[in-house]
Image (cartoon, rainbow, N blue to C red):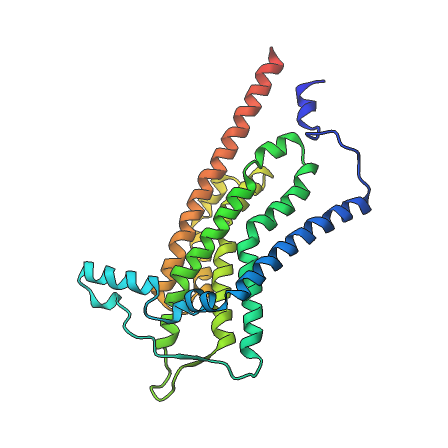
Length: 286
């Protein structure tokens, strides 16, 4: 069999499945993913004291890691402006079932975040058998890189964007007579939105890789639209953070860095494809 034909054949010759059999297989992948999420959610639910004190409510206290690092940076730069000395707000729950409901919701959300690598692996295990050999080679390591970028985005959103947003909103007042008393659901939803949004945005290199493979993106095109990308990144930074220039810049810098990395990834993909085409042409000529 010719080599070109081998590249278009699936890796393994398996019995062709019917539509219902595919649905059944997908159902089991989804069921295992859901079991993993629920199991981790139960663990998080039972570890209520640790999770709420050290994770969820940590950005609302001055002993949070980010605030401590800012104070140390201020001491090193001999600038008191970086040190955050107070967070003038309280968190309250006005509904009788508010705390219990948020306990369940946050447990499921954290369980989903922790289980994400396994969930993506289950989804990928369903998709990958239908790929051709060449496609599977091109997507080798997909689970690792997608999970790595997702978790990196989660950590960046939690340790960088969230505390800066909390600090800004805690000090923002339209009038000194108005005290900041935040609802528990609003505090948690703000932190959750920031963390999940940055986790998704950090998938940019993977998206560019896939689009380049599909022939929809080129490094030249990304370079020519770099100015437009900067504006889009600044807009995203404004949407993800409160109207604080420092927070927006801190969001924009890593996103622009990911955009630059994506250009290199796209260029590497194009170069590899061209080398492969040249090798095929040489073999054909011989």
